[in-house]
Length: 358
Image (cartoon, rainbow, N blue to C red):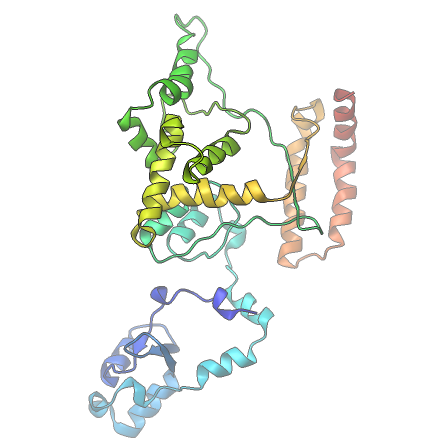
């Protein structure tokens, strides 16, 4: 097991310098709640552990009034860290670092953990570099985030199911004088601005900031079903010299300019440029090159029994998963859950869906 993959970043830890005067270190420890504290040298390299016992022995041996004559290095236990790492089993290490509040985490405070450098991996979509990682990189430019696609099959391919083909709806009140204005706004946003107003630098700069799509007159997105693949292909053609930047539509040009800016100065790139490149090139290349299997979803509607019973079945499912994850129930509980699911309305819903799909 790679221990370093699960350790807390050093910049978030409290530690002492080996050259700190011992009297100052004792005063610090008295005002804190630590029973032991790591010690590093002037180069930030780990030296060892200083415990309450080490400080107490120093006080008894030298007297508190004489502690200023000594340094933390004089009492540090240089073997303590090695003892811990050599004697603690992998499962115990994971148990110690497990977030005790994970059952109560919501998407908002998970994002807070990510931005604050307290979360090292998470599940997310291809655009996760834009949100929340753009803020995380802005807070810590040295952070290295990489996207990965998890294989779900034994042959290392990834299966996924099609999602609901619609998301947001725009409605106007009954009797509104100009309902057609909605369609005109959509046409301006997704047709005219992209293809007819390609030289509008203000709009380009706006998109380059990776602004949330909801920050528009209409909080919706209207695009081709394979828009992501199209955009990646166009950007890739320009970077490989097959096409020219002027061949891109305005939205693609904004991504291209941000990606180009990142490539010119990767070490000191802005978080916005990093996010654009990592989402539109790095992540999209992984999706483009991966072996994937699309599983067509059978039904997107809502049957009569789903209206009345679906909430209960969802609660039954989530509670069962939580019990298994936390160890309150073993894996055999899943079989019982399936039986209860069918008995609690699942059978009726399944029959209703089958009738709808005939």
